[in-house]
Image (cartoon, rainbow, N blue to C red):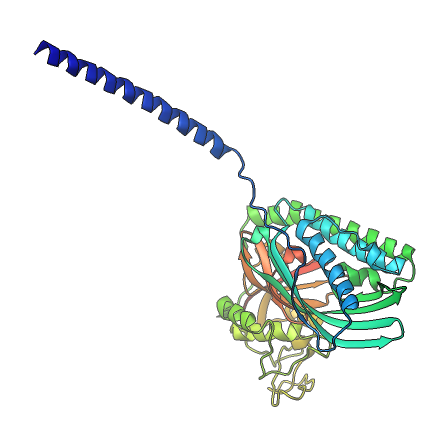
Length: 411
């Protein structure tokens, strides 16, 4: 009996010792795991492709070396935006000023995006190219291209931001078997701003300094004034309206027609752009009624979508007003309209934007209208026509003037 009791005691003590030992190991492991949780988790780095080209449509069979030069330029542009580390494109050009414009246009965008306290690099990106015109004379090749962009910005966690049908006009020259870009007209970002009316490297430098300085000031104002004000006080307005705005219906329409055109309406894409026409249609879909009364009107009555409706300022349900299609005319209509028609808060704090609101942008003058499609963690995404865009972040839309029009309803 004594032997059994001793054995039982030994077993009990051994079990207690093992329990204490395992407990201490568990505590140690938990502490180590907690310490690891306090450490920042390194971001998942996606493998950057050798080329960002997805699809190439070339019915003209552009010579391989000519097309390779264009793709090399596109890949350098994409790699710069993907990593926010600029790729020097000088060796791709035969013209010093064109190379300078290309590099400085990229530099403006990259430096601007680096200012943000979130990750403006990309998880994924690709482009599609379509050749829509080609000419070859002697050693000169002219290639006109439509570009579609697809960006997956890191800060948007999987949302695709797309832009379609961006015009680029390449003039390429061949000398001793080497191909270089002699001229490039690119309707995108600050390339166009630096290119237009620049006759010398000095002109390009002045424009570069101007836009860099203005963007710096705009960034500071947005971050230090507008964002702080919007965080401190929720949006409110004393404007009255009878019919509230249906934001969901407006955005549903905008999501359907960002890259196609509603055939029930006349298409202004080739007549100065369809951006405001698209925005006006979206507002109508959201319950904002046409206004055909008074001196200030907003209307577009289409009898045959093949023919442009005539301008009509009379108080009748016919024709259209410039405010339906013209960016600055629409702005002035909302700013000054009283009584019947659309009710909106012009020049509201940008960071009060909600899906369905209108944003008008421009460099100097107001020239382009977009509609807010989403607001994700404070990031404002927009849709547009001409250029067609879907869920494109306003932070990447680097215009100097960005005006929010909060749409409230109508009377």
